[in-house]
Length: 465
Image (cartoon, rainbow, N blue to C red; front, side, top):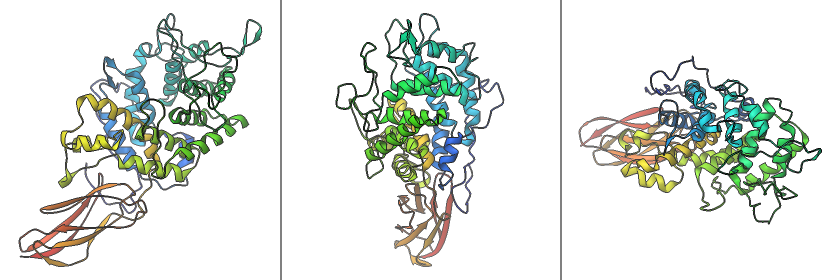
């Protein structure tokens, strides 16, 4: 990829779509098109497309014939997560089409055979992706995903009386029922966009899963429990930031403008913003809870869609810090995976010398797919990229101060001169960065460079022995 200097580095970076295997792109690719909700959320912010674009390029390259590999064959759920994330990146329309072309013929492997096995959450998520890929979810791989999802959604009236679990989704499976609030949120989105008669009941049941503080829990009560509502302080109603973020995202994308939904979104947004740390990070919940890029990116994206731009920006900055860009003289074992986002910072440290271990690659794929969303709100630089030397000439071996302007907040760059280099990151404020480089021997003019993942700038000074 060639480098170019742009006046303000906030424009989309044109990157080539990664080849996904011969024969996968059977149909002409549709350009990826951010949803109206995302466009509206970003309208008043100056964002840098670079981090989401290079993350998208990396994760697209991880696909194998349009599907994300798993431990035992394709991971269809992660494939759909990837496709939904890539649909927000303008340059990735071809990849979204490739994913669809590989997924659609095999959709039964993900949603069940439709008779003995029928999985509600996967049906809802698949229907959501089908629409995002500009396909019809009522005729997808020979299946009507909406009708099948309606069959997995409890009716408002059962046996002639009001049904206490009206709108609740459930699996039909000999393996048990694994439906939860995340699947319910996708069901609301899919049924609403299909104008299903069951959309209202599904929405009302989802809203019952929101506790008084504003968060959504992850799991439903057992089907025979009378209330079915989130009750703060009771076992089973613990706060879950990921479930809350996905509920927000899917409710916003459902287009439901009802007062009940708008009120729920406001409460969830307040809770998510309160959960966010000063660093911008959001801690997950449940066993093994940790500060990580998945929870932070999902939460930041949800807050961005709710037009809390300050919180979305803070989250994006924290996620971007976990996207190593070690190029040029700053090369490491991670350079070949430029664009990938680590789940946690310690993963970056470990992989800098060894690269991403084969058994850890799945975690990086999951982290990066979600990170693409949160990185949509990464702030742009306020200036063009440039490097300035404070001296016009110096002696060999001198440590000379250089000033770098135009790095976006949290953006990684490499400052270099023959024989020396420094890794730098853009300041949160976007202000200039000052670093020293040691000049090499030789009586000649030397070039000092600053290079980012997609740009470079240079200056020169005379060196004398």
